[in-house]
Amino acid sequence: MEFLFEFGLFLAQAVTLVAAILILVAGMVSIGQRQRSELQEGHIEIRNLNEKYKLIGSAIRETVESEDAFKDQRKEEKKAEKKKAKQEKKNRKKEESPEQDRKRLYVLDFDGDIKASATDNLREEISAILTEIRTGDEVLVKVESPGGLVHGYGLAASQLQRFREADVPLTIAVDKVAASGGYMMACVANHIVAAPFAVIGSIGVLAQLPNFHRLLKKHDIDFELFTAGEYKRTLTMFGENTDKGREKFTQELEDTHGLFKQFVSDNRPQLNIDAVATGEVWYGQQAVDKGLVDAIMTSDSFLQQHLADWDVYEVRFVHKKNWQEKLGLAAEVAMERSFLKVLQRSQRPPV
Image 1: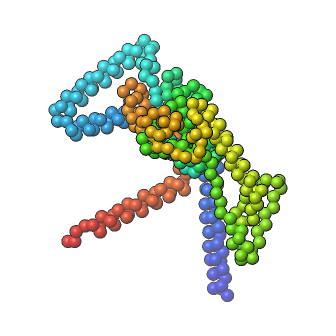
Image 2: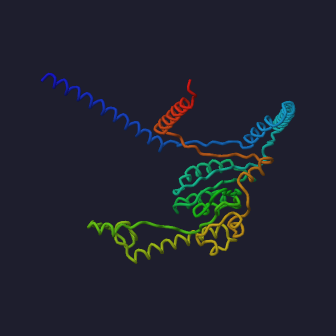
Image 3: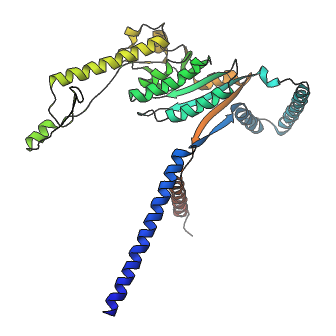
């Protein structure tokens, strides 16, 4: 009996300890989620692309030029920098701003998935830029997306329209693909450039779903769906679809397509919308001929044209990682390092 009593006491202590740990973990998760919803979820990062390419050029010159020639060039660059610093100091004393003579180009990236998840970042980046934008400044957005959900890309396009509403010149660069929802975003721009083989267009609407009704019926499985409202559900995956439901669903697709066409027409009135809103896609030069794109050019070429006379800044919104994500990242890094060590040992020649 004494053994059973001690065992029961031990079991109770163990259960209490496990319960306490679970409560603690649940509390930490709850606090983390509450902080994520209440506090800012990330921060803006800004990188000066002029400095980036200047450092790259310096590294190349150091490698390809002779040591003496590189040293002489560095001396000349330092003299020019000192001269520029003195001039700026004089201008500050005169309460002048030398920076106002150089326009700014802000560069954003949008890498779209089916839900247009990057819209949250885009919203923050646009809000940050609009607080500091000056007359004459411009924005370049590099869009890459094959499209996705209507409401997601509709919101993304609406975010870009904030630049147009603020009279900020907006250029969209398409290096690979801007189709369907991706083109819905691109058409908002004042100017669209695309690489020669970038995929453009797909101004259409698509919906598809499987139907398992006959399979369920074959196995004597009933499926019941209850709705209030004649068209609350038009098509279903498990029930028996009707011609009336199909007709209504098709009409909804046509209505959505009509809204899509109207949106593109409003933003690019020069287009023959009926000729391009067929759901087809075109490559860069074909898209120029159709009026979908204004010029053939990569985003890199566009940037290079501005680096000499403009201050070019890349703007990114970076999400703050919670403790779960940080823990997962640390574990991933540790596993990767361990794998590399094992790989290195396996490649050592035998002694």
